[in-house]
Amino acid sequence: MGLFDYFRKQQQNQPKLPPVDKSRLERRRIYFSGEVQGVGFRYRCMLHAQELKVTGFAQNLLDGRVRAEFQSDAEHIDALIAALQREPWIRIAHMEVTQRPVEPEEREFVVDYY
View 1 (cartoon, helix red, strand yellow):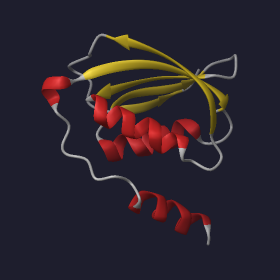
View 2 (cartoon, rainbow, N blue to C red):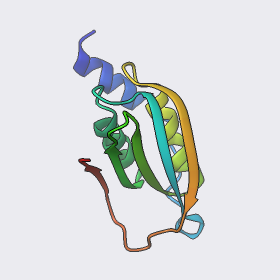
View 3 (cartoon, rainbow, N blue to C red):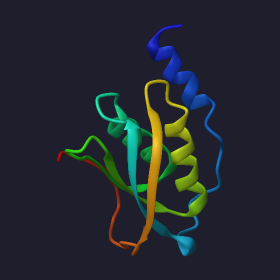
View 4 (cartoon, rainbow, N blue to C red):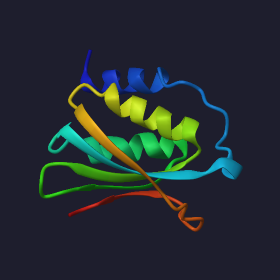
């Protein structure tokens, strides 16, 4: 199986979720540690976030971690984290999670660079 076929299969295996419940929006800041830099982590965050209608950002930190903020309802954020944990080259060793205020004007997920 080629790499393209692998990613297509991964997308087909994504759980089908109901639309985002905008009345239950939350925002989580998560510091990811482990094998999360140099493995396509931020790019995969962006792809899964777009697919799941999650907004926010992902940014590499100089200490080797990735800081991300995810905004959606809890079900969609949890699905995004689960999708990242299934990625073959990504190894999340630890997540430090805090709740943040919702940013009502945010409309997309972006990759930030340092």
